[in-house]
Length: 151
Image 1 (cartoon, rainbow, N blue to C red):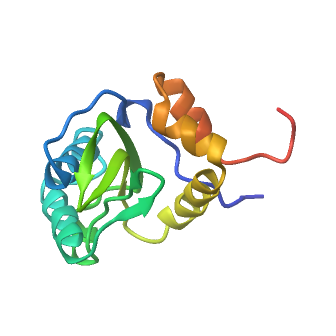
Image 2: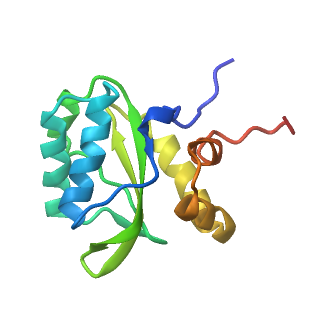
Image 3: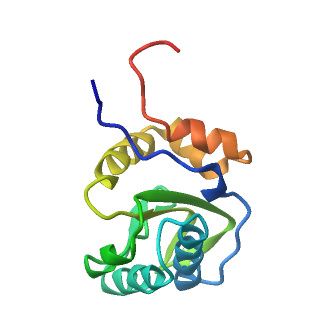
């Protein structure tokens, strides 16, 4: 029996020591990582920038979730996410962002991820873990789908 689960997080898509001079550069870095792992074509990066120009993807707790426009979906090979941490922070229209969760999605596969991420951000301890993680394994474990079993 299949269950709805968040997107698997490719450890290659977790970058914990990034630097960006502003939100456009941070969005561009997210898009580039999605391209590097084969999730999207280069043109998707522009779709992500276009989305950011139309509406901020800042969601609070020092986190932004850059993603492409509807038109950009054609440049996505497979649904994927990336997690980039900016220890020095990035000015996001007056807000300080330290974590960007970039999304490439063809359909609605990212909806489960967004629900999972919302739960993490609503839990101050988990949100802090996401913002301060220094090991890729910490981020991967935090963003794995929750299981009912104790394993």
